[in-house]
Length: 331
Image (cartoon, rainbow, N blue to C red; front, top):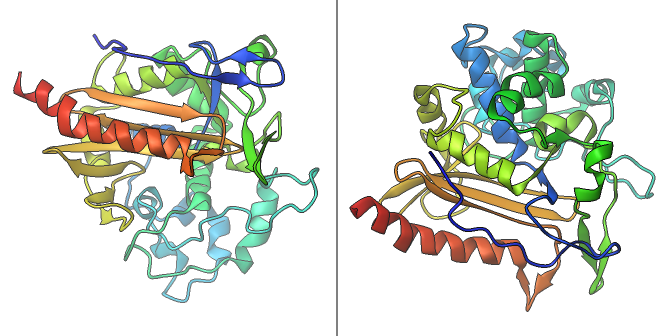
């Protein structure tokens, strides 16, 4: 079975309470949530409930009202949404809140549908990669339409429970876990200030609402590596890790189905990053050697001009891809 080879916790989970980071600390994972949503959608595909070639309007008919200068919205498929190539804008809520009581994200689906007639498809669907948060929200709605459960309930039943992720949850913190919830911090004018808490991702929960301690993310990587309870076939995971389009964001990087793929050191790494409300995170996994890492910080502040998470991730990836994985592969 899989095991955690090395873990390190540095600094404070909550500065105001002087709580140190620990294995119990619960972090906000933001867009890493998307990999959970995608696996749930592929479960439905494997159970015969949908095809990736299905038009999204089959499950989210409200999308018929978007402005598509390249054709008809019925040409946009689930696979295009999974591969961030459907042509939707990046932000779910492009209007920023200028008051601290404004919601960060739309709180109800009706607010999203009200925006759809003002939403434009920005390029020919399927023709290129462009990261889109609302695209994943539409996949979350598809899960709800097919399971007839709220997104959070559908995820709890078929992902969290079988994987034993009892401390993973969406949005507001359960009462008994409040003591373990990390606080997010932003750097404003050189000063580190706490971000909004409790943070609620609203209707964008399927796109970025996950909270969990680091051991829960290690269990997620173990599942992806083929250890422990298997909630999706290896064939489907391999399909998710097959390049669809280049991202143009890093050398050798492409997008599969909601997973980013990076060819380095003779291996194909699969991963995702998250960035929201002061939290920064990233994981990479080499499914062949079954080795990977996850890194998270609860601040957007930089040290010596370097983003803490991005700096740690760059050094870890180089060490894993250039040294650790090749050494394991040769044994």
